[in-house]
Image (tube, rainbow over all chains, first blue to last red; front, side):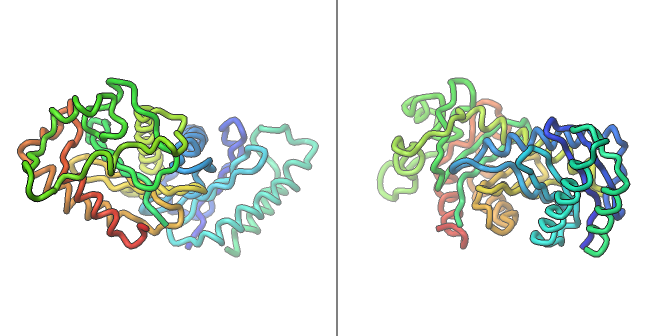
Length: 136
Length: 198
């Protein structure tokens, strides 16, 4: 069980935060990461439209053979994406994402020097995210 | 737990087969020319009479009933609410998602890797791709376990038996879906026999 990386995608599909924790995924150039975040944003919207019954949320978990993406969509449209090993438990990943959202609300949204929807450069947020991910 | 629908795509990105089970939101009929004839009786742009003339299975004239009646399996129940999407649009979206997610996974993984499934609050999409480029896609209940093994069995069982080994089916034709009553019936039996189907 390992957490590979964390992404924060703003409501327009732009990647505003990206941090790698453990090796296990191919290294991405920042341009590639931006493109992938945009793709994920689009796919997320389409998956919600394909529901065979009733209205659906967008994709919450995407699984491949070697890793998993857990996606938390907040009410404001910001997406928190956690990239983990396939063995990572659902509940554990969800709790990490919840706590990262909390840290985001405290460390980023309440920061008067943060421009909304722009890349996050905050040492406080970095430190809190580090503390949330490390023991997991 | 249940199974909603099954799509089979060939290596030319076209949908060659469709069947559904417990969908409460049915696709609207495709505009004519939007999908290949014979993909599914329910959503084809052609009328049923036109379809019947092009069947690639020899149905026995009486005696044993192997074919499954159209009305029983495939015609949409008009009382259920219709999905806003026409079928040809829906198929394109399904293929588009699979293609983009596969590319994304390929870019992110260290070694060779592919999409296995994704889950939303109301459904889970499973993918199995064969060496020949056929993609088997199933939509199931979100709590279902991985259905990859089931898709593989569907491929090695009914698909090989009734489609690949059937000289009357033009594989890769780009003109005709898999329109075979034996395959339809075998697929239906197989899906209904899954432990998570009820």
